[in-house]
Image (cartoon, rainbow, N blue to C red; front, side, top):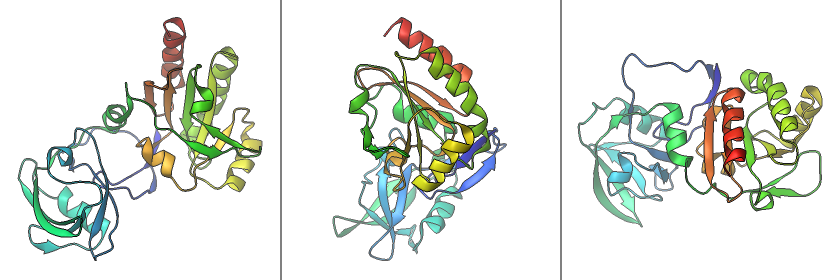
Length: 260
């Protein structure tokens, strides 16, 4: 079981919903745009998911969607539901403001990839997004650059996420096995005070970072918890585990250390 922070798969609205990974009887529809609040009464496109239908259209980050096939939309949820109800393969015309000028953009919704496919597609083989986040219960900040030269395992988790908490002992064992050759950190969008309590309650030894703005979590495209990301010494993502499969991550760590 995993915890889904269900970033609308045409958007970025975080919801904490406990649900098992499963294969849908009907394929879900997606476009691949990350949504935010617009300034002109529409819905702002915060980002475009690589290799998505939106990436193959003229849509751009910063555009504001005002209409779908001529019908006005004013909220991310409404836009998500409208696009999600479109038939796969049927072209949809979005009325958008691009750099302040109105234009129509045609996009063709497609069947949505699985959660694992989406996250791995975004990260694998690519430079890990840089970050600078405060350490919980310690002074100073942690950065991606500070781990340069040594593999880094990033555990995206939360104190309210049962599978995340249950995987912590295995993660601690993995860290102990590779002490001195592998860095491990946890990143959560929860406030520092909540995380500090969790560190004490669960006996977490590795550094925990607070991403209250959600900027880093969004940069990594994380919407399922836990998700573990393995970054090599050069800063490139080498493995991703969606869900609490520490055993799978351990195998990837062994392989990376054997052939860095």
